[in-house]
Every structure is written in structure tokens, then in C-alpha cells.
Length: 370
Image 1 (cartoon, one colour):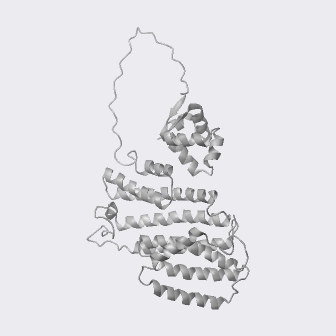
Image 2 (image 1 turned 90 degrees about the vertical axis):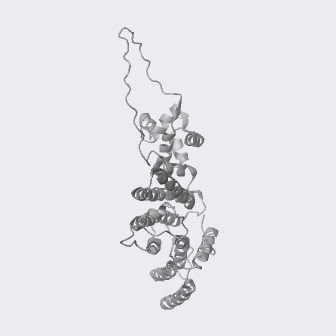
Image 3 (image 1 turned 120 degrees about the vertical axis):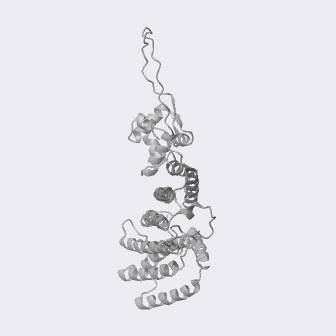
């Protein structure tokens, strides 16, 4: 679906823009920064002396990038904590689109895959995204020599486990989030360059896949930092549950993806002490005189009950370019059957075998999933 050139911004983008500005307006110096921005944009407009409705050109790209820098710099100055940084991220999407509109001028065009001009715009905005994270991290002063822990954060309860993280640990988490934002921005850039409908199924699927990949990367770092802080097993699991709930809500992940994150980063299998191994039991020797019966060959069970295998299948689909429908076709089954398998772990034995083959595994390898 093409964008209406008279209304280049979606309702969602405009709503995010209003929400973000409302947050930044509460920051000291906001109005002074707006006055400075007006002066800069007026100077850029006079210096370039381009018609308001022209055709795309190198000069218009320079003009659009200069305006993008001025606007992003004005907004990033307001970043001082996590809420203002999140507000900046909402504005970043709108500013990126606005820069493209100013570059294309009067030409009703959209960026095609590999478009160099859009790549330059997105790259420039990534610079300001990194700056926003740096300002957010710098707002937390390094610990003194007498105190190796950060002071309590505003708005957190004294018992909050985040208060136990060192300054360096917090910095590593901020760096991980910045890397995750790159993954998400790559998805947004693809949506723009492929001219996808922002509300369409393909766009939602692409965003969800990139968000899930980014979430796994951030949760790995967060769990490592909590473990390094010396949290007890129960406190560590509770902390990771809270972190997972937060990232699932923030990045609009689904229930199955939350379940995968919990199994990978907050379950007793990966957090805490390993289960004790029972003592070996001495087998009772069979009487020599007892005749040995001929065993029947092992048969494939009619029904398989293996939730771990279902989670492994779901992880495989999420990491592959296939949709669930495409994978179901390859495995010779239906979406409905796969949804039931994901929810209950139960499936017919012959379908289970075909799923393993579609994943490039043997039946035994998939059965032994952990």
C-alpha cells in the first residue's frame, strides 16, 4: 500500500510524536532548545536556498540531513533518563521519515531496496540514537572509590535488584540495548525501502522477528550482569521474570516468545543449582535359568508428548525466514496442528517425525530437546 504524499505520516507516527513531545516538554531547557532549533532551521533554509517543492538531488539530500541533525540534536539534549530516552526513540522514527520527505521534494517516490539516500538518512539517525543512550548512561554518575555500587535510582524501591548492579554493569546493559536498537532500525529501514504497509502483516511480522532477536540479545547480557552481582537463585529468577515482562510489553512480543525467553533465561534449568544426581541403583540379576523372551522391535509411539521439542520447533521457526504456514506445509501438516503442539506439547508420532525432518534433525534429536 502506497503512502498518500499529502499525508506522509501514519496516525501511529503522529500519535507517537505527540506523546514524545509531551514527555520532552517537561525537561528543563526545552523551550530554549526550541528557540535555538528555529534559528538553526532558518539558517539552513537560507543557506541552501532550495525550492520547497523540487526534485530529489544531492543538494536536497544535504539539506535534509542538515535539518535532521538540527532536530535530532535539539531533542537529544532533553534526554536525561529512561523515559526521555524512550520518548526520543519515538521521535526518531518520525524524524527519519521527515528527512526523506524533505529529500524527495515534489516527487511522489518511495525508497527502493538498497536506496543510498535512505541508507544515509538511517545511518545519520543511528548516530543520534547512540548519543541518546550515551546521555542516558552518563546521567548515572560513576561510583566513588569508597562505594563500588551505584546510588539508588529515583523511583525504585530500595530492594530493587537493579540497585545492586555496578556502574560498569549498567553501562554494558545500555550498550546491549543500543545494539538491539540497531536490529530494530534495520527492520524499519527494510519496511521503508521495500515500501511495505506500516500496518500490514509483512511489516508486523518483520518487526516482531527483529524485536524477538533483539530481546534475546539484551536478556543474555542482563542475566549475566545479575549473576555477576551475586543475587541468590530465587532473587535472580524473580528479577529475570520482571525483566522479561518489561521487554515483552515494551517490544510487543507474543506469549510464545515470552515463554521461550523464560525457558532460556529465567527457568531453574539455567538459573540456580543443577538438580542432584540420584545414586546409582544396583540392578537385580536375573536368574540364570529364566528363559529370555524375544523383544519386539521398538515402535513409534502413536502420540508424542514433548513440550521442550515444541519450544525448539518454535525457536527454529522464529529464527528462520519461514512463516508458520510455510513450515507447516513443509512438514505436511496444518497451522492448527502446530498451534496445538506449541500449546500442549502433544502431537501425532508421524507428524512429529516430519517436523524433525523439516528442521533438519532426526526424530531422536528432536525428542531429546532440552
